[in-house]
Length: 419
Figure 1 (cartoon, rainbow, N blue to C red):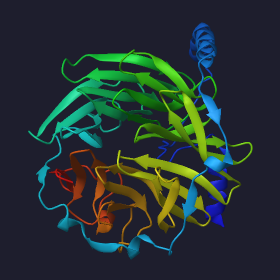
Figure 2 (cartoon, rainbow, N blue to C red):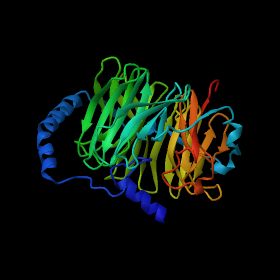
Figure 3 (cartoon, helix red, strand yellow):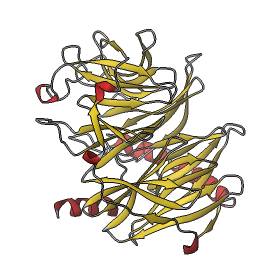
Figure 4 (cartoon, rainbow, N blue to C red):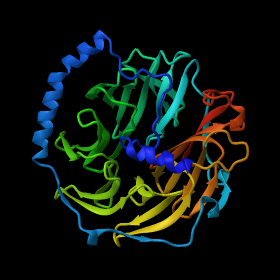
């Protein structure tokens, strides 16, 4: 019952995404004179943004909602995570290299690119007063500072959104002022360019995915006070509004974009199929009410995975887009922070390892249906490898905030080719 109440609150809020990171002891919106001046100066910019959005709406995609187009759910025998063939993770993670953590710096690894480089948030202080964007090259063992954070705030953070073609897109966010700044970092030249700034942004979770032609951004919109989806064309270098309603989890799969849309007022969740060429969106599944709703969509080009709340469990489906079916895969009490790359699915879930104090990480091969029992931390996936925080002792013996130090762990990396 407690679990059901929690999910009801989550759905009725502004579509808070799985993986939301909230800092303690916050003062989100300062009411001092300086803040008021900033707000006044931003009025003109806000008005320009509204006018640009109105102009963009003239080319807004057409929508098709026909129940005859809805995908079919195919249910089979109930299957839990522990019903998969389960083997120790070292039968899979057995050909890796390991690295010590950098000296005099606290490094929190967040993202692994296809070249074997880990990006993350680093701190040269002991109180988050000297944050910077850092990289750890798992091919050479070199750690580098890329950019100091632009905020003088103990409540600032860095989020890595995507790396592609020698470019890195990341966000700097100050929860105290509610300011989010987005940057494009040229990994070859070292040039960092700001391309978007938003004010009055609450704690949030951005999702970015890409196709060969462009990048789909799902981020909080300070004008509508909800999450929208915008597409950036690598050819035209322009942004295009795809979805103005509360939405999330854009995934490119076999020629189409897919994403979830949430109507909190009417308790409706929808799975949308979007065709970029014709600018047509089609609703292919819909739920109503609090007992069943869509709350996660993930893919890697070959696999498209849907996670659905079906009180009191969370169900995972493999989507067969060619035949219009959601094929039941498995279910469990708790599934979140899902990642899929190169036929591997990871998530945080129900603790089954004895004396585990932190959320347990799961590692599942989507091609073989083998579950690798994993007791370490911080799994990061790419199209060519996997990196993780390799613990040197049981996690319940490690003090909170002390995982990424040499006494307690190391950074490990394994190439995954020929999958």
